[in-house]
Amino acid sequence: MRSATLMTPQHDVEFGVSAISSDRPPARNRVRQVALMVLLATAYDLAVRLGLGFRFESSQIGVVWPANALLVSALLLTPRSRWWMVFVAVAIPHAIEMRDSVPAWRWMWQIVGNAIFAAATVFVLRRSVGTPLHFGSRTQVMGFAVVSFIMPAIYGFTTPAFVRSVLGLELTYSPAAAVLRTTLSTATALLVVGPFILKWAQYGVQRVRQLSPSRVVEGLLMIVTVAGVGVAIFGTGPDIARLPTLLVLVFPPLLWAAVRFGPIGASTALFLVAALSVWGTARQLGPFVLLNHTDEILSLEVFWIVLWGPTMLLAATIRERERAEEALQQQRNQLAHVTRVATVGELSGAIAHELRQPLTSILVNAQTGRQLLASPDVDLQTVRELLDEIAGQDKQAANVITRMRSFIQKGESSFQTTAIEPVVRDALALGRLTATDSGVDVQTEIASGLPSVRGDPVELLQVVLNLIVNACESMKHVPRAKRELHLRVNASLHEVEIVVSDTGVGLPVGRDDRVFEPFYTTKPNGLGLGLAISRTIATTHGGRLWGEDNVLGGATFHLVLPAEGTSFLPRSPRSALANGKP
Image (tube, rainbow, N blue to C red; front, side):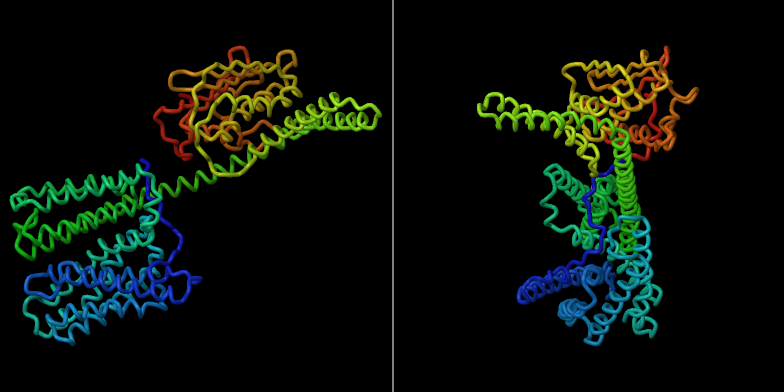
């Protein structure tokens, strides 16, 4: 399974207040800082209102307290030198919202306690989980989850609700209940709100504009689906509470978000589901309303936790797999480059000979032209013909150099529409003098009207050239009169097949596939990577490469590639060496 994730930065990038460029004018920096603090204060005010509006019955403890999650996220995105600005920005709205409902000493206690909790949580996250929090690994997801429960549990022993219950001033709940409620309300907010804020701060709205239209449409469809399912479940009358199994309908769109959009999609979908569930339950709608108030709240919080774990872990697992495949792809590209350089080294003599011929012609024609120009009666027509020959020979030499340069250049694989005939003819041109020096009679049969393939032309050239060079070298111990190489290219409705057949020594007895094993070679100075890399390239192009012995001696190698338009996904290099005969 392969996801088309919204690629998020894995390097340590600071956002929020810290995202201000040092080369901007100081006045502009100050304006931006003020604007960000106003935005943070506004968001914090809304978060406090939500927490106060959805509380445990007869309690100051909110069912979910997103304000602390917002504060922790802001500190994670801000350098420590500017934390004071964040604390000031959140303290003002907290005091404004709480001053009419609790005594001054209590809301001041809350402000100080929240600040200490947030700073300690950020410190623990940075030391134990690492930053930035990209949620692209299972270790980071699990670490974040553990910290999200441990730190609120510790924080619960410092809240006014716990202290008052211990002193007997709070009769609504016991000290244990106060700690449990505080832990769940803060932990669930950290799980649901934290990744959502952090991922979108990392990704940024600007990068959304760079997405292809198809990705934008798919993302919008995913959000609409999650919202539609959420409204259907949590916005329906209390009758739906008799069918709690309908909650499983939430999982398919969450899996879609995790698989196709990675951590940012998973966190967005989870945030949306949590928001809709709070909205519905607060209006006595949805599947939780038949429970008593406390069980209703606890069930809602457990529901969020149950959704969060599998969804975020799935997104992280897929992201880990993609990173592993990217690393394997980079290693494969490096090995392919090494084998191309080695091949050029083996062909150096032939390349020098191929360059010597046009360069010698250029020199002879230039000397002849100079002699003609020195004579009294200059034949301008002859001089023009000599110059035309020089230009033609120069183009010939330039073509040799261009082919070599494109062949050995190092770069990432670039899949594009590729005509297979020019690739084969370039391979024949590069291997022509090797065949000539080996006394091999090369016979080609290329069908007309070949369909294009989707692939990297340099990598495909490498495969075909490797097969030609190997075929020539396998016939060194065969009498010259019997050295024949047949190259045939044909196509079916959905595939293009390149067949290279020789009259050499054949494949290892009883183990045809041994030649595709890394570092297996019969050459004194060979690397043993040519055919192994060639098979990997064939596999990543959705094709197959295998060899077989001929009945009358020698071997035949088949390279089969899907024609463009055929449904295939480039395969992982991980399974390349296991790809044998069809």
